Image (cartoon, rainbow, N blue to C red; front, side, top):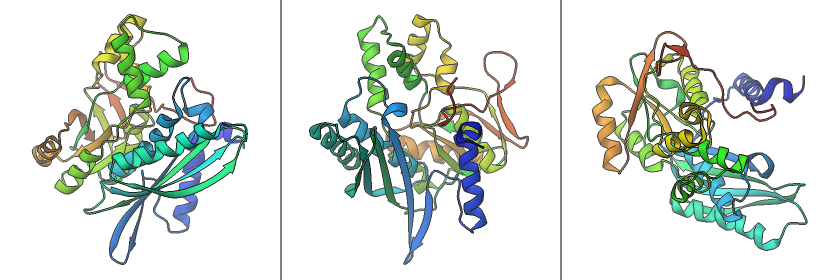
Length: 326
């Protein structure tokens, strides 16, 4: 079979099965290891210019986004970023200054979250490929994807839909009538933020039973958390950003679809036992964040959407490499 037939999800599932057959715990946002009594988390992420970079995005922002993508995975586990490594595969025809801006951007992103860029590797390719690996310190027990239990509240650290609207705007070559709205959408897409403070606060409070980074899209991330935890989810509220609502209204789009399937957002989706909800919200609010309740975990498998009409199954859909995108 070809990768185009199994898709990224099928390929990743095969990798996880292989690793687990070798006794390696796999299938989370990060990997975990203990060295001389110190618990560490390791994560990596890759950006490919053709598939991951919208037209008009500056090289420095691309480098920063690669760092943020990696740090977001560490944040979801409650790990404090310590260091990053960056590997670049670049076309020989690329301008040197633009290539250096990629590296500078990774350094900017690392410094923004208290980590250091320690080095990496370079190679030649027909297009830009930037991979960032991160090392994080676990000062408290990690928050894995697999800890949600029936009855736990499901919440997010922010609303969704900004990047879905921004990607639609960039890829379709459209501009909303408001320049302010256009700027906010572009900022969300090109200068994303990792929810590190929130992830560390939840880990410190020990109030979250499960957590996942939502960069593959809200709908897919909900499914991934449910499957890892062996539970179902009932989603009663999808927080849609006001700007996404405005863009959808002007362009005749479904704001719910922008929020569920946009991807490229770095909010955390967490499960919180009911009795710890007050502790979790207080911990996140203490660092300037918030938790938005979306629903509850259930004993019945699957993800059901109870929004805007009759309950319906939420399709397991999101960004997937190797397959044509719908």
